[in-house]
Length: 358
Image 1 (tube, rainbow, N blue to C red):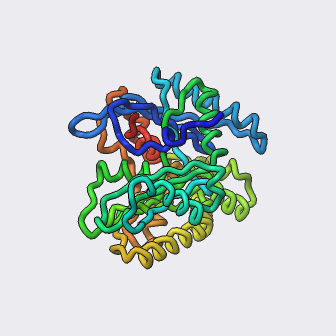
Image 2: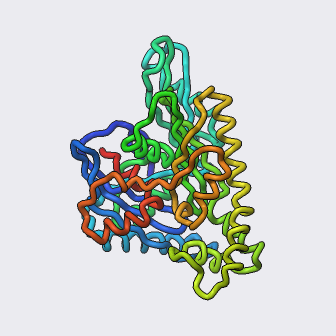
Image 3: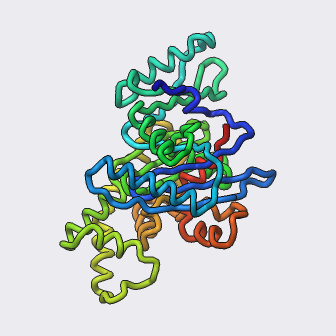
């Protein structure tokens, strides 16, 4: 079945709201919002863990579908139109600048540009673009591309849960859109969002020129957990339980053990810190952008105790935990409001996706 890719990568905002469906590697997050004059109000939100399936793809699909349905049931959402997010090595976001072209030649030029810059064969993927007013003598814009395999996988997972995936978005762009809605950028400042999930780390940057820079890095929460587990000679599941404890201490463990684990976290994060630092330096050199003064950190791993503080110490810019729901009204009840207060940073992508419409 050939999908309408232009319908999938849709940039324009219209009136009809949709359900945000963020399918991660270990959890599913959903959110729904209504727009009003003062911003957005959350009408429903939820999250559900995806049961581990080792390397069994068929079982993983079953477990993911079950998690989506659990989310829908727990929130009572009736909408069946969903917007999904894409990230990882099968996704590319690039901006382009061409000499002045006739409108009918722009799409062909974008497709040719995508073939040159994408790390995969664009003939096996979808390409879309949006023009941005920048210089009247040039044609400037953003192109996005993703493999058909990745898109069809997200569409199928939604379909398995009786949802219709009517729109695709790039997770890094969704994060920037969400941040720009509530954290107004000051002139001459560069905005940075760092989303650290289990499988991928997304670094999304926006400077004064209005052109986004998105990089998805493979080293993320799972890699950090594996490093810590190996160093301490324990299972990855044991480390995950320890790192995600919300209490101030580790029940039954000594303070010495906690300090050793903290040291392990610092060592395990060295690669991530190096990747982020290198990317920021590359961006500054290429774009001649203003120095980054503040980094907003989100994603499931951002909730690990001591993680954001470690990044703040090492990255050379003020680094803060970002909960996009802090500045939103919640009309979904006290339980949902409390959940978003605690888990909001892990649902930042869902927040950005929920701001889309068809």
